[in-house]
Image (cartoon, rainbow, N blue to C red; front, side):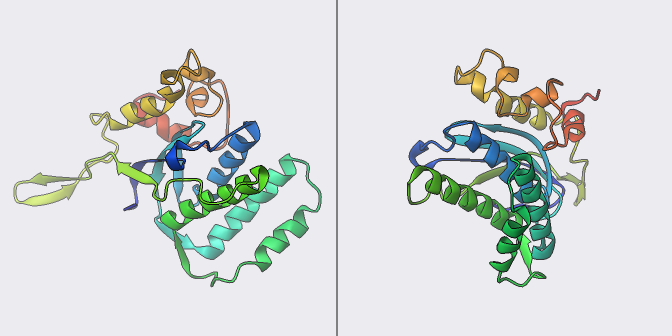
Amino acid sequence: MDFYPTQLFHIYNQGNNRETLFYDDHNFHYFLWKMKGHLLPFGDLVAYCLMSNHFHWLFYVRDIEITRKDYWKHLDDIEIKRRTAKRETNIWASIQSRKRKRVADPYEYITLNSAIGDLQRGYTRALNKERGRTGSLFRHRCKAKDGWYHLEKKGMKLREVDKFNRNNNYAKVCINYIHQNPEVANLVIRATDYKYSSARDYAGLRQGTLLNLEMGRKLLGFEP
């Protein structure tokens, strides 16, 4: 995927041969934690929907690469929060074990592409262990589409234009498309009835910590 900074991307993928990705609430919740750990060091999640065999993200990229040191620190902080929420014991020992397995140079850079790969592989390993399966789970390549015209021609020159121009309704169309997936699939009557999308956050029915809701509201053209 060809990411670049200060840009919105619609990122999506599905299971191999439309294979199921999420079997129960535990799977959905674990994947959401993985999203928080692997995506947020690089930018802001604006909208999402997790369906049983695919997912959609609308993601604002701030950085396309960061140092592994910063990436690992964020991952460890999120993992501590996840394990604390589950009231697990020996959390510190688990974190130390994770750290000992890391052999890469902490001052090397890791890209957003690699982080998404880490997310999918880590989730696959957990699901394979849980369900006694083997092999890949996701399609080999995530897909990503950007939605903003970031350059325009004026005379003989190109100039940057406002990426958040409200006259460009791509963000609104994309957010609505993402949120309407469960409704279109006849899983719920209203998009806000579905637990595993950001529709409930936008409707004020939930106050999660995964989204940059302020950015999303600006893109939609309204703020609370």
